[in-house]
Amino acid sequence: MKKVSQFQADGKARVFAYLSLLTLIAGDTMFAEDYLRPSGIWFSWLVLAAVSLAGAAKAEVGKIYTGKVVKIMEFGAFVNFLGKQDGLVHISELAAKRVEKVSDVVKEGDEVKVKVLGFDKGKVKLSIKQALDS
Image (cartoon, rainbow, N blue to C red; front, side, top):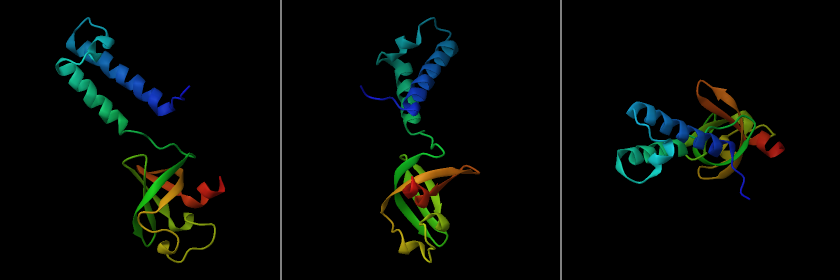
C-alpha cells in the first residue's frame, strides 16, 4: 500500500475546500464531487487549482531533501529542491571542516542532500553538513 505524504493529504483537503467554496460562490446545491466531471468552467478552475497546489509544496524544518546546486556565491550555495523551492546553504554549513571557498566543496549542477534548518524572512536556510550527520 502506497503511503500518502502529509502534503498530499493537505493538498486533497485544500482541493475539496476550494470545491466547497466554489459551491457556495455559485449558489449551487451541487456537491463538490459533481464538479469533478470534465465539463464546463468549474472543471477548468479545478485543474488550475490542482496544478497550483502541486507546485506549492512546503519545506519542513528538520527534514532532509535531495537538491541541485544552482548558484555559487562567496557566502554559500543556492540549492533547488522540492521542485521550484530554492534555499541557501551558508558556507559554514557546507562541511564539518572549515571551508575556504564554496567551490572547493560543491559545483553548480551537483546533486546534494540538504537539511532544512529554518526560515528567515521567507527564505529557506539549509545545511549539507547536518544532512550528512543525520
